[in-house]
Amino acid sequence: MCYSAQIWADYKKFTRQFGAILSVGDFTRIFWERREGSSPKIPKAIEQAFAEPRDEFESQVKRMIDEARDAELARIEERVALQQAKIVEAESALQKRVTKKSQEVIRIAQNRIAAESAKGAKLLRVEAAEDDDRIWPGDYTLVMVQEDGRKVIKPMRYQCRLPGWTLADEKAKPGTYNARRDNLKTVWRKLYGHHHGIMVATHFYESVAQHDYEHRALNEGERPRSIELEFTPQTGEPLYIPVLWFRWADGVEELLSCAAITDVPEPEVAMTGHDRTIINIKPEHVDAWLNPDPTNLAAMDMILEDKRHPYYEHRLAA
Image 1 (cartoon, rainbow, N blue to C red):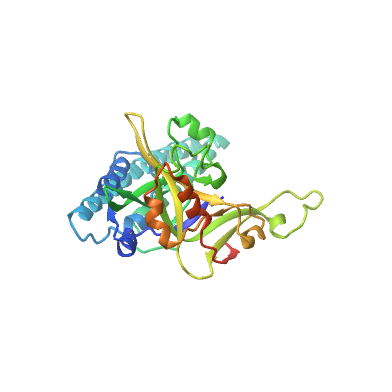
Image 2: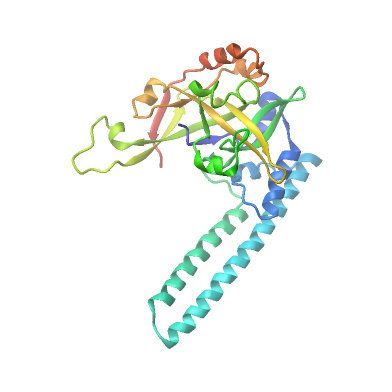
């Protein structure tokens, strides 16, 4: 399963490559939610792409990003002040009598202050960092869809909440950031042939068991250990990853979410001990993929079968 990837986080790449336009409403909604106190996990590179808006639509998104940042910084200050007050109270108690309880209160509060300070520093940072464009399940990614005859870029959570699901269903089945190709006409039948998109990535990451990677059995008494591998197409070309997506709503919450389609592993991926590989469709199939006919799933099957097979070089992730 593709549990992490480095994505095209700058929407302008989609504009240059595909002529796609921005879904301003969907972008402003997720930043409005953050401003109001929710915590959608949005890669910093997605935000940084709006640092220099070119028109009023992009300026609107930029304003929401700034307002969301300022609101979160204010909440961080409140949480830090609360922890500082706990430290003062515990230090006062220690002056009267040394107890492990008061020492533990101080230790926990200091750790929480450090964590909140790190969050604040990340919000204020303007320089790009290596993993700013990397996503994990639960993070937001950019997905290109077809809407009213135009290619449109939307922010979607990389973990799909399926039609009819509740939050409890999602928690019980957290693996829906990937959709197995052999399950598309069963588990994913309400989305396959209906809600198609494209996510673009430059690298993907997999977690594998070290003993599988080394092609050996576990030694006596050895516990399984996981290692992380980074895979990159030898051609240097980006991966056009087909996704299924859904706009879930219950009258209170609205969520755009997606899943990347995976298939049997490419030989070089299987050799590392992993049993799946995300599908990488050919550029000439992008338009057809984004305009599915639910009465002709055979055409969609053909696109997935006729996928690209670049050799995926790998290395141990840092």
